[in-house]
Length: 408
Ligand code: ADP
Ligand code: MG
Image 1: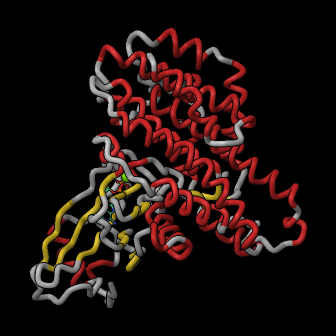
Image 2: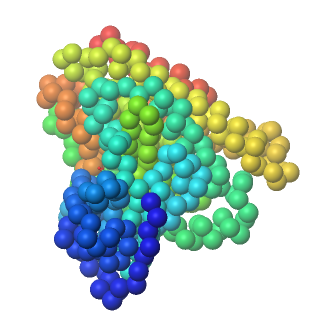
């Protein structure tokens, strides 16, 4: 959609919009619709961070989505750097260039209002809820692998000019959002130092022995944490769980990249993998587990890993031109490193969603008597992924452990 933004005295300084203000904003500031058009505004934000509005011109049925950030978190009211909204707008633009099929188009970014106006992707559904309903999406692995390989490899300085890449590292420095991940993903699950972990009654001993007192695991997690903080390898989405993926039988769209920063490419891949295990384990423990969904879930975990690996190699051959990087041994070492990270970060993500305070919906839907077992399965899987990450070479190894669980 083409907008004709106008300068307006009203929107010179950030204030939080509501449905009524948004209605005026799209006309007065964005020039999206004529003043007389019947405009319907619906607040659709389900997240606990920002404010999201869907705006429809009821005459033409044209629509757009506005996402506005505040200086305070929507849920807890604590302050959070509002620059995250600019970062989100910029990465959406970049990713839309690299993978237009999979990323909503940004129509306008208003840096005074911290309001991002983008393509409405309401034709797609939140993938987390789709998987809870046991819907399957045969093209998922192919499409997400394409998105991952392109957005990750093509933002690295294996491909980008050195100066351009460094400018981007600077533009996407995102300390407050990274701080959240550094604590919630890489620290608290292993020592509960902020006393925010929520451990299911009956699993306290299991968690203490396997996480809080597991020194070999903690060393590996420390390495993954250090890599997350220091390896500015690729421009990451940074929060690529299934609630950030909107999907239907025709395709998918990735939204909500406000945690974006330059980090290890394997982090995004690992997040996608991790969030395929939750609906699978939930289904396995349901009173009536769906065989087809189970097989599809396993297939997806295997294929996401394998296809990302293949596509990274293909795009590498296509896009990397620097002579020293064209060496096969160098290429294999780089790609093996990314895939080992992917497995490790899948593990840290699984673990943090089980014991941390940001739980996944799937686990809340497991019956009380099976919850202890579900969480132990997931924790064991997560730990194995972390410990074995450098020995994993193909997707089949990611589901080895699952086959054992099927009979239980
Ligand atoms: P938050 O940062 O608060 O988590 P999200 O970006 O996840 O916000 O958006 C919250 C919800 O708003 C999404 O789950 C989705 O339902 C809806 N949404 C966000 N962006 C779009 C879009 N471009 N098109 C349609 N719906 C969207
Ligand atoms: Mg969100």
